[in-house]
Length: 121
Image (tube, rainbow, N blue to C red; front, top):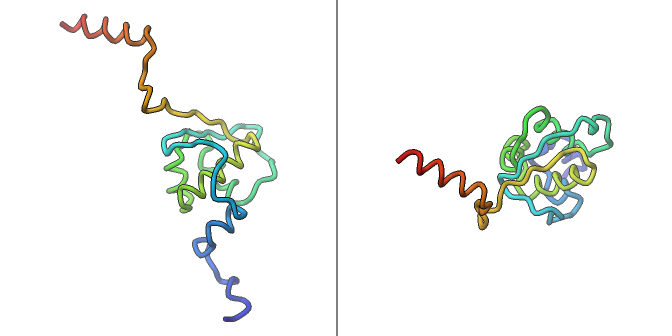
């Protein structure tokens, strides 16, 4: 194999563990629907190029983990690890969705829904 085999390589040819520095798990419990938005203070932070690209994708509009993975072209697990780096650097804010196993047990909310349903009858 020629020594310059990587010279014409595209990012898609790089193995995921090379992008994440060998890490295989994120320290954060992120779902595909977790929303991220960049923070203004993130400008000028020293970040890896892959993290900077994710940061650009979620500037101005909240983006889900799934959408960031699709836009970046990285596997979801790699994207979650990179998002963890952004969270550690305080470059993004995380708005986690409500867990599926607890879909809304706030008594005030349930009473308001019930009152609204009764008013329809």
